[in-house]
Length: 172
Image (cartoon, rainbow, N blue to C red; front, top):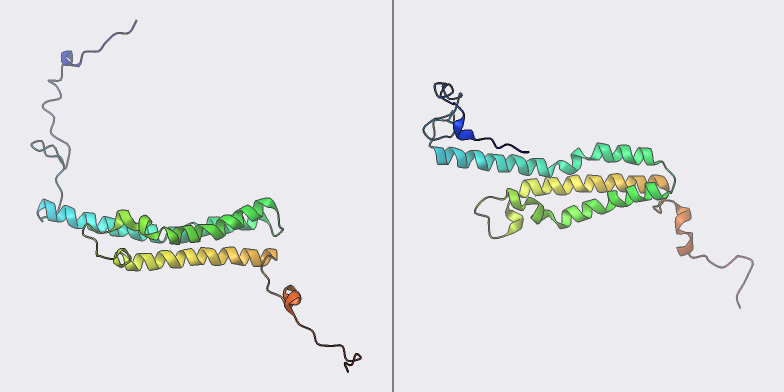
């Protein structure tokens, strides 16, 4: 039913005379880097730069998703329906969750020898991350204001307003 293929019987003598691909060392089996530095320091420096660039990408990720979230808010309408409330709730809760988990989010990008305090590792990226999340929160609050869910007018506070006595009633 099934036939087995025996790879040892395949004639590969015609492939042995081909030169190795560009950038490939036949002796070590790895690619040759173009840098003149020693392998370990060049790899270490490039790895640190890669981790830093990935930390910046992670820091501005909330701002990158903001146009799509704004489009979703626009498409949900200005009324108070279950769909628009779900989107607004998600938009308001996500920044709080992100800020609460900031250290675990940036943990893969921290240097190999972290400082004693976890807040001092990648401080600029963390500040940008918090600002992007605050921007997302501001868009959510703007949508709540547009839907009439935030008390912004004087009529919203009438229950807390104290009134004086009417002028025609006198107390003796």
